[in-house]
Length: 348
Image 1: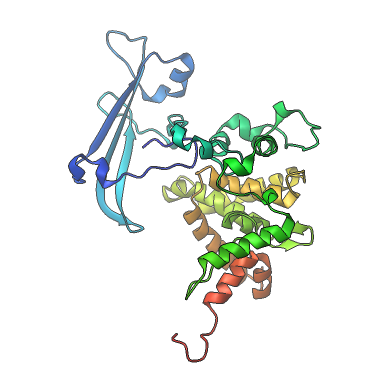
Image 2 (image 1 turned 120 degrees about the horizontal axis):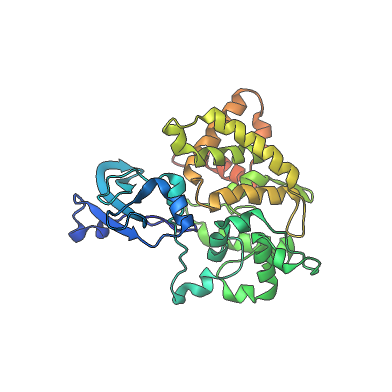
């Protein structure tokens, strides 16, 4: 219920309730004692005190979950509440404080080979992405060995691991370097399409990586990428991160957007090309990190991005042709396919 430091998220299922009686309430109470001075400082607003030991505060976390009776996105909505206090009636823990309770969880040994494999999308990478020291410091990996491996950032560690480990044999997924250039990569894509398409189904494979990354980096143009929508995807991710605060009226979309635009301008100046990719590829990786961290919901960000692009078109910032040129080619091809006129004699 408190979450982990990677992308894993566990939903409450019917089986989590006693005898699957979802009308009942789940209640879990945890008490943390022998707190350090740093712990007491971090949780000062939520501490409890005993009359027998007034100088030894302790922290009580009470998590309650119940079925709200509502349905969201086709699933029962279970309301989860986290409160402090001996009786669970103290102040609710803020989002920032709840982050301190998150655990670092690695799967059982039977899944370790995949979970600890190298690469940007691996579970190890996801865990490290949540460590402030890793996210804010370090340098990219240089294959020629010109940099100090002790100073590598998260992407650098992954790239170094790819060089040192028999990566293809120890993981189930592939990276671009596994294929013999663009021809080998295209052959792999064609193979995926051939296996997944058939009858009325047609498959479209992403050009580079994930949908969010491809939207940010844009179509390839020569040896580089266009990156036309990078700022729009960044802003949408920032709005998704602040979505709860926006709906709670703790802030507003305009303020979040302004801050996001300013931060993007700074980030764009800071990123530079390296052995792991062009500046626009590096920028797109930073943007996708917001989704990989789990703080920005892809679904919510998609809604903000759609609204933002719709407004941009209405204001004349993009023509239809310019929008098509800014979108990933595989996405344009998919849209063209589902909006094409039906063939003569076929059912609509």
